Image 1 (tube, rainbow, N blue to C red):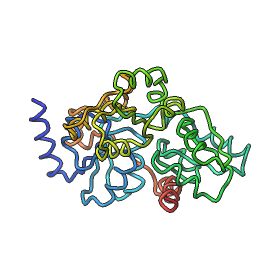
Image 2 (cartoon, rainbow, N blue to C red):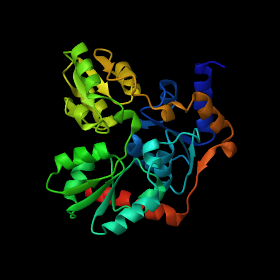
Image 3 (cartoon, rainbow, N blue to C red):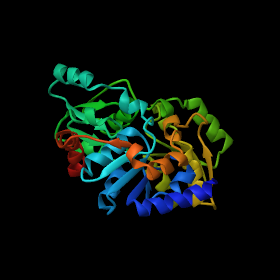
Image 4 (cartoon, one colour):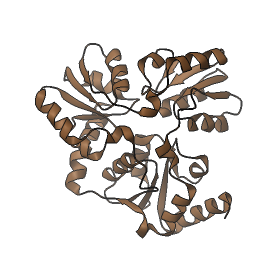
Length: 305
């Protein structure tokens, strides 16, 4: 079966079996072409709330599908590949967070959206990379524990210096692997290009950027900018996506290391197999109590944001 034949079969099955397909922007192009909604992690979970289908197939990683489930408890939510996790989301256990809260009970816990549902149950507010600065600034609390990404946390701390923000050593190993030397080399190789980076990159790389923002922010900036060349400092699928959507512009990857192996685990075959046999798919389950506790910090994010 060719890619086109598989895509056609997927489009047919999702209608027959009442599925809405969500695809993160880092997912392979052939999967994105079959999706109903494409975007970054929280946008997907928000947008699917208005979907009429009773089943959701999430092409991304585990914590994202969890968020979709807690916001859509009346729907069946499947992760296209059950092995697709997130090293950042999984690097901190609830027990560790509870210990830290006990040491400094006066600190409010701000959790990056890239965390497990189990961790979110013990947090005060959730943030995305695009909303983190605004939400932390609006919080009544002056003492904050930011988890788990110290690079995004540092970006927030520098943007909101009036707050006492404590960080933990953690984050995205892919974004954090990019060096300032690579940023300088990319800018030297493409002197007319603007450097757009994700705040999960290390501070010295962020300092070199012409724009710092979330995945959706980077895409939006590149589309609206009058500039014609861009160096993309996030997962390199974004550079390819932008090249398709903006053929009159040029996009270069900041580093060949910016490839997320967990995102690349999901294949078109995974999508097809789940649609053909959802009973054998990887379904996300949680109790109403678990969902409500984890959703509290997300509700706070929506209130403050």
